[in-house]
Image (cartoon, rainbow, N blue to C red; front, side, top):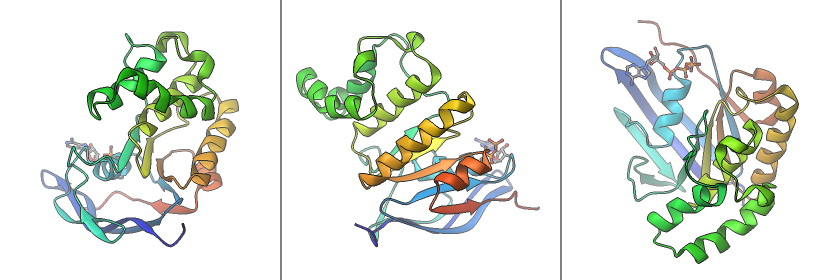
Length: 215
Ligand SMILES: Nc1ncnc2c1ncn2[C@@H]1O[C@H](COP(=O)(O)OP(=O)(O)OP(=O)(O)O)[C@@H](O)[C@H]1O
């Protein structure tokens, strides 16, 4: 399992207008690695996560998966999943419907197949008893677990989290760490942006410190 270069970034650069945000960045993650990206506000942490998740395109450089170049912005590619800071759940859909929507719409699964596929993840993330509830009926920690469950349904090999602890009460932070470590044991490679250096260091195998680029 270890030793697989699940994700490599080679000389990745990104500017917005004339402002360079990321300059020839190199990065290598083995399967199961947890990377924490830390750095001050405006340093480019979110931009880097969005590049890895394919929500933004790099200006130059290459992304490799197991040594083979890939395009994270290709919508047919579900290598990377994303858990957003505000979770982005559909408010009008139940937990189960939030989790099964993409498998049904994108992977063309039947509802029954998608619900069957969701069952072990609901169980793993302790969500079974919430599956008929709607997002407004859930706590922040429960919504986050639904967002993680939803991302896992597309079978990503890399899961990205934007500030996973920022919206949570301090007593839930340890629970988030437990979830990350549980997923690591399944071989999931995880990339986290965090302002919480203590959490970042406690959970990570690798730390990437980013700094704003001087003009
Ligand atoms: N779509 C965009 N267009 C123009 N500039 C942008 C865009 N997205 C980000 N930026 C700029 O790029 C810089 C890096 O932003 P980014 O959000 O990646 O930083 P960050 O390290 O995540 O900051 P924070 O910790 O405050 O979230 C900032 O100066 C920001 O204003």
